[in-house]
Length: 184
Image (cartoon, rainbow, N blue to C red):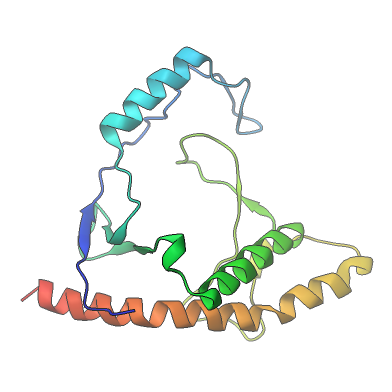
């Protein structure tokens, strides 16, 4: 895949304290909604989303931090499924299976700025890491009977890192080349 393609630099707008369903009561102790939104609340949330949010579903997009224009939040490249190679499909299947299997051993991470509630499971990478540290503080306590399963998943992380690294190399080369050209 050629790295000489167009890039869309997307500026973000930040809407603090603007949840999509502000009338849904919230339990502050559990940090969860007390009920599902009504049909009217969902309809209103859809109108807000249509007005304030932008669907990004094609091409190459760079999201820039609205509070720091020199900081990139994400680089995304969308590829239609029918344009993926069989290796790409196998890699995506491996990544999604790895992440799904890892949920058993990873603590959910919540965010105070999320719009809809809920939690995500996070596996984080840092620019530098301690020797043999992959999940850091996100690892759940689990019984010794699960150690073999955890070890099997952990052993697959090398392949995961190689797959992700192979996908990010062209992105990063393009980003820095494009950024250099963009700032001239």
